[in-house]
Structures are given as C-alpha cells and as structure tokens.
Amino acid sequence: MSSGQPRCITFGTLHVLAGILSLGSLLVFSAYLLMLYQPLESLTYTTWAMEGATAGAKRCFEVLDRQDDVRDSPSAMDISSVKGAIDFRALISVTQKTELFCAT
Image 1 (cartoon, rainbow, N blue to C red):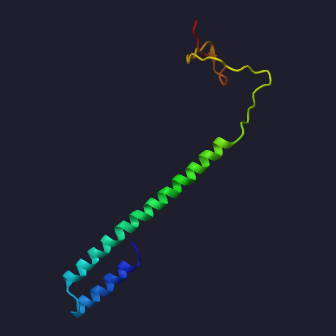
Image 2: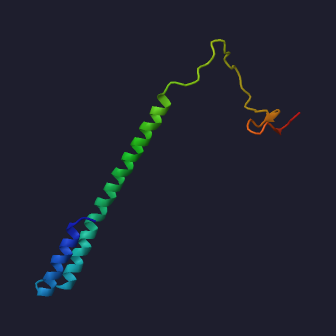
Image 3: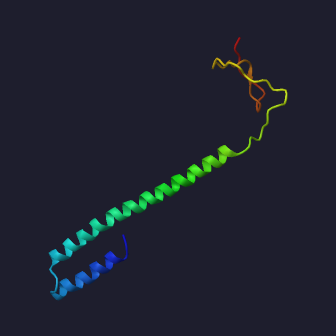
C-alpha cells in the first residue's frame, strides 16, 4: 500500500465531515484505489520473484561452470558399461571403527 491511500482517506474523511463528499462516495473511491493498487502489487511481486529466480539460476551456473577440485589420475580408465547396481561389502564406520554392514 502506498502513502497516497492514507492521505486520500484522511482528506476524504475531512470532506465527509465538512459535508462536501458523501460517505458512500468516499467508500467507492477507496474501493477504486484498492482495485488500482492490487495489480500493481502483483506486478511488483512478480518482478521480485523473477529477480530471485534469476539470481538463483546465475548461482547454479556459476557452480556448474567451476573446474573440478578432484582431477582424474592420468592412468584412470574410462568406464565402458555400467549396470546400475551398487554392492555394499564390509562397510566400516570411520569414526567408531566398527563394522556397520557385512554382506557375503
């Protein structure tokens, strides 16, 4: 809401008390002001949301464009085919030095 609406209501109230304006006219004018400000607030919110999304996308691309910290060994082999199965065997907790899972 802008500072114009409270001023209009204040001056409108003074005009109603002075008999220059009817109370109904003041209420209709106030409703018209609300109908004017609602789309403007929606546009402002949309602009704000788009700026946030743009900043987030920019940050995502910055992260994706970074060079990897861990480089492959020169003797590393390329994986030709992958089945998609993961097999956990003798999983050990590093902090407690205990075996968490043992599959045979």
